[in-house]
Length: 359
Image (cartoon, rainbow, N blue to C red):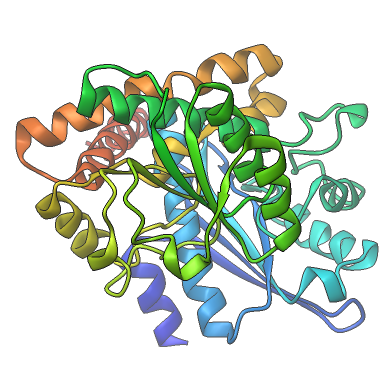
């Protein structure tokens, strides 16, 4: 037990909830990182983790990332995340997700869930039968629907921003982009990139997804292990995290890393510094992929799809601000993004403490 509290204390998590139900087979972890700016919101990831310890590490990293993502995006939300241990193709069903919904409901709004890797709008509909603290439910039920196009659009704007920083022009005509992961987000990202003249290289463990990208976007299929060494302008990780690591980083020939995946750097401090040393511009993941969070936020804060689409485009200027701050202070872009997030959180925390009489 002491190890769990040590893990929580490393990034000052507020609460971790372990969810277990024998009848449905549910084994889940909900992590609430920070609620200073508002209730914690973060997706529910379903994945066949090799161990419970691996699931715990993932949910803690992801929940902290959601705090920073909401802060930099200017949303009145805190950060949280949940993981369900198991293969969604084998064990996902209505009973399991309704059980999960009851656990979410027991937190009385401190945590709001949504879809993530391994879950979808249908699963969130099942969750909504047991709690109102869920977003990303079908539009016909008053929700915002699939957030993937918004995540992709924000990432697209972020890639343009990085190109602008390096080339003083954000034209994507002829720009070579290697996209890793052609799922819902990766597909929509490829579509926007293709429509704006980019040349695409794609990899995925799903051959059908690759075939679709090749057919629709004239993309070039590449084996997963060969993607990192491609001579391209942009490497866009859009699958699981930690793909920038000790093994892959020396292979990189790209000028920019800008993609939709969470936790792209296996060791944020170490690998961000190494990218800076190599002259590779890194678009901090929780900044560039905030479009999906912005979309589901409209279910709480209002504004609708036009608001979400337009606010996702603000990622372009936010990243330029981060790049310029990093350059000015000679720090990594990851450190610059964290600095912006922490500044906003600290300012709100200060006002709350003053209001409560704590100076």
